[in-house]
Length: 74
Image (cartoon, rainbow, N blue to C red; front, side, top):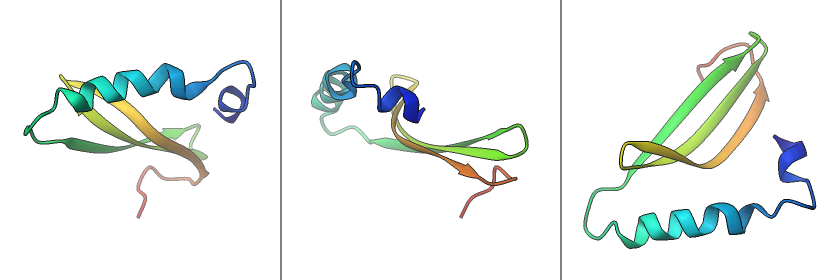
């Protein structure tokens, strides 16, 4: 993931920013749902993602990959 984010030819904010702004602008007084999700990769790495839920879809906000042999994180 760092290779993608550190690629100077890809500007992440113009790609995801308008989508998140539109979702939040239309939210109004509705409840905002946040989701914490983990995925275990090759029993060695744990990918942790924080997303907002919009119309039944998860929109990732931040994520990290840990050298951790379990999908349970504190």
